[in-house]
Length: 201
Image (tube, one colour):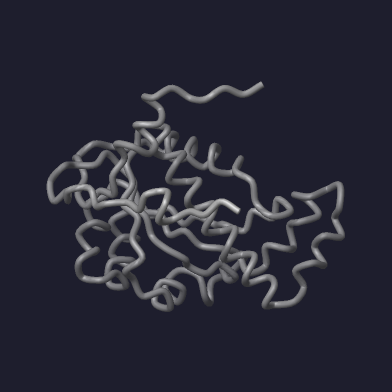
């Protein structure tokens, strides 16, 4: 039997959580980043296909490679964050389905068509990126998601032309992770109410 989490957890993950633009000068250990992924990977995906791939950018050298591909307004967010994640998806994710979906290894064939593979990778990889943000917040970290970047530039910089499986990774969006600072933090924007955004049929 499952039970609702308490109000503090809901505040941390949703109600009080913000998209941060600046970061406290506070280290985030690699062990915590690994713990974020270990929660993220437990979220469901279609046929457990798990197409998301996460490029964790930590070093100054790697940030120097990423920054030129970000919109000007996002560059400081990348430079100053303890960690930046390129949320990507593996266009050859289906090759791992026999390992990840062992009761039906033939499910790999569902994704032989490139269009089906792209649609599944994008949808489920985006979903896993959202799981990652929830996991990070649940473990006491803050997030700064960004879609303002040159997708082709990031793909060419980090993925295309590389050796190994990363050759098939494609960037979706970028997210800074750390301990957020209230510097440059906007007032919370409105959200749509149930009557506007939802229908019951």
